[in-house]
Structure formats: C-alpha cells, structure tokens
Image (cartoon, rainbow, N blue to C red):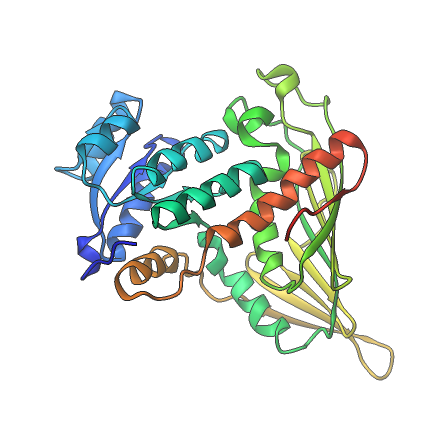
Length: 342
C-alpha cells in the first residue's frame, strides 16, 4: 500500500456530485478538513459538474469514471452513488490501484462485499465505508455507559425507525436499486448495535410486507415495512424493524436490554431504566455529546500517512450487509437463514 509523507499528498475525489443533500461537497470538505487535497470529480450530469467547479475552483471534472481513472492521478475516491452501483464502481477504482470509500451501505450483497475486499487486498489499497455515524454522539455515549456494565449482561437489542409515510419517487424507493427498506437507516442502526454486541452472527429470520404504498417503481417499490431477527453465538438477540406503516412510533431508535437494566438510545438523549431494592423503577436521563463524524476521514488520512489502525475496515462494513442480505433471503423464502461466516 502506498505511503504518503503528509495528508496533503493524498489527492482525493468523488464519484457522484448529485444535488441530494450535497454529499459530494460534504465529502470533499471533510477530506480537506483532514488535510487531503480535493482533486477530481466524476459526474454524469454536466450541470452538477459546473456546481462542483464553483464549489472547488480549479478541480478537474470528468463525465465518466473510466476517463477520470485514465487521466487523473487522484489517489482516493469517495463513491456517492445509488447502492446497487457501489460494488461495480469500487471494483473499477480498486483494480486501477486507487483507494476507495463507499457511501453506506458498502454494497447490497455479501458476495459483492467479498469481491470488493478481495480486490482491495490484491491491489494493496484501502477500502472503507462512509460510516461517519460510528461517531454519532448518541452511540458514543451508549458505548461508554454500557461497557461499564450499567445494564449487566446484554440479552436483547431492538433497533427501530418508523413513521406513516408513502415512499417518494426516487431511487431509494426502488428495491432493485436500494436493496430494500432495511438498507437506508437500517444499516446505521445495525452498525450502532454491532459496536455493543461482541459476538458472531449465527442466524437471521426476516419478515416483510409490500404492496400498500405505490410509487413509479410499481412492483419494484421497496417494502412497506420489514423486520429482521438476528441470533448471535452469545445468545443475544437483535431485532431490526424499519416501517412506513407506523401509526404509533415508540420512543428511541435503539434499546439495549440486559440483566440489570435497559438503555434507551435516542438522537438527543438517553434513558436508563433499572429496578431498585424496593422493586421500584429508577430512570436516569441524560443528554448525548456532540457527534464527531469528521473523525472518519481523519482516521483514513492518519492510516495512509502514519500507519494508524483503520477503524472502518471493509470487514467491519460487511457485517451489517451480511445481515441485510440474509434478511432479504429469509423474507423471500419464509425460512431462517444461517450465517455463512460472521
């Protein structure tokens, strides 16, 4: 793997500069904050390339990835495109000897993840995923407190995100393109939970409901809701539910239950529930610290320059994808699916 004397020697670029959330600009700004040098943008839409040129005067722009890889000496590329294109584009970059960071999720299937990991290893380049929410304040606080043993031995984790709302007519509402309703916030919630659950995955069962909401994708519209139940070797159970049919959303986004208490995690704050000696429930409430998502690109820069340990490895990113892949298989077959590897 190439070593760099300083972060500014790392020339960075993005594939995809779409208008949604301005993620292309966000990625380049975060890379620059970590000391790296914005160099190139590849985007199909000429109008968006004009925006990129205005945002980063002097940056090189390309209408195809192939042309960029041929003409630019860019070292590290962030792939900010629909989920079903991540694997193909990452392989294209990795096989050209470039480091790659995919927007989450890393890919849609386990097979795609494994091909990407193999290519990164073969070409001795870095592959990572934009799991900047690994450093969200709410999970930082949860990890700190739960690791002290405040809720005892972990027994059950419940991850949930829901509302009552028709999906929009964009690519995230296409199951073929996005992977399904579990692949957006679901991958974040799983990544949170897996920071706490220190055990291998053994089995996944999943259930889904489709057909209530209609979009331009017709039968390819993502599920109305889906639920996955994951077993771990430790005996811990994890449930993940993402729904657009929720008339009565429960509080919190992740609930960790143990032998001594329950930790309810939400964006702004947390609540810890425990019985006292009198058989009464005590509730401790607190606020979460600020998020530190900028640490993702700082870690990547430090890994390439100083040899520091990479935190969001492709193997780590693969774990939630394996769960979601098995969930899709289980929901389709109506049977539990064994994990092939953790």
